[in-house]
Length: 148
Length: 155
Image (cartoon, rainbow over all chains, first blue to last red; front, side, top):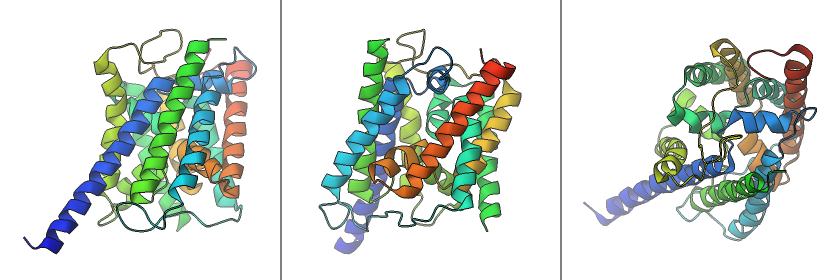
């Protein structure tokens, strides 16, 4: 195997490992914070009931850490494993963005699951969650069609 | 207030922030779950799928690692140490909720992680607007379902 080929292999293996590490950290974070419990999420959203502040701490901790982390990362000109920083540049607030967010909010409020915790909870194996993951994927395909 | 639960929330949030920082530092990507997993499933982008699949596996294995450690690090409401809580409703409710979450995050180009965590950290106007809208809609939905109707296993 040529050196160039070798480097290419290593870089693609490294990228896959970096992806796994990111997912693992994310899943650990969701589990430790209790976001894999829909009751905690719904407790936060239920401002007229016995309010559960946990999600506020999760979001606060995550946003602050990312805010600082991104500023350190963007001192570099490119990602460590190559390529470019893919930062969304769109700025307009269109109906697709706001309508989509509204539909998502209703689904989130009904179930207490947003995509991260829903997927991370697969290990809990329950029929209702399986049903939700199934229609969530259908929804992703439908959105792709609608957006075209 | 349950300070231990809040503290665990903060610690978990920091881990999520480290994940987002790591993914941007190494691969230059936004850590948005609906984008990473949704595009993996609906598009299978050539040469851009392996890391997405690995991320998905990592995401699922995170809670399993905490369960295997058996150290009571979970934070399920009312049962400290448990890692994965029970769904809030039956199959019917979840079928509807899943469709709304899928279509909504697909059209809105993001969810709680992409818009809520990464977008807010970038001070992106679209993400701030989206986060405001889905938070308000979720709060209204919970108010209506819990306090006005009382459906689907929600107290």
